[in-house]
Image (cartoon, rainbow, N blue to C red; front, top):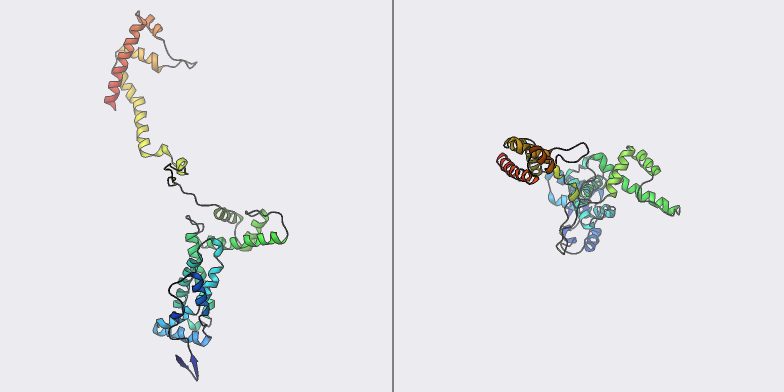
Length: 313
């Protein structure tokens, strides 16, 4: 395909560059294929970009994307240390590349490769922050910047320690390193410490699934739960409090004077030394009856009170 540009004739890429990338296969085959795709000259890039901008030519957009797929592979390789699949990083980077191609303005005087790098990295950054941990470690723009810069700077500290033949180097930052990071990134020391803590910690399931033998695994939810404020427990607590105050008072009012005194002396009074009230023999001496009779009166009074409490509840 030839494009006439002024007095010069420019030979463009093959009619169907998409055929150079296999639809199926492993990641190595894909990377090998995109590295064989031809690069565009500045004139070709300008021509395709103008066709896309002026005529919404999707074929031109495809050629711009295809010629920069190797850039995505190169950038994605820089983020392999986060433990995420290389293929997924490339896929997200390709999304960023397509966004860059859609917004690229050939009149700005910059090459697409320089413009697309921002969009590719932004899309990969977003993917890493969403999938690196179950719980997000960075939500604001400042935290995201600190997250990626802190990780790379920690690698630099480790490399310096190895070059200096240091015997050991801790995974956590030293006070000197924290100060260096805060000064270089122009952030507070507290922000550096907090972000390092987030990055160093791991995700823990609140409610783990049962083990293979059927036993329930222990998880943080077992000690995080506040049973005191559980609705059912709160209702039961209020009912117990009501029975212990108004309920007991109502039940005592249902007794005659002798039975009431016997119950109060036996169960509701406490002496200064912590002992209980009067004994059966003490009460027997007061009323001039046997201790067995006092016990019978007490039993009958307790049955009457239980009935009164049931009606109160």
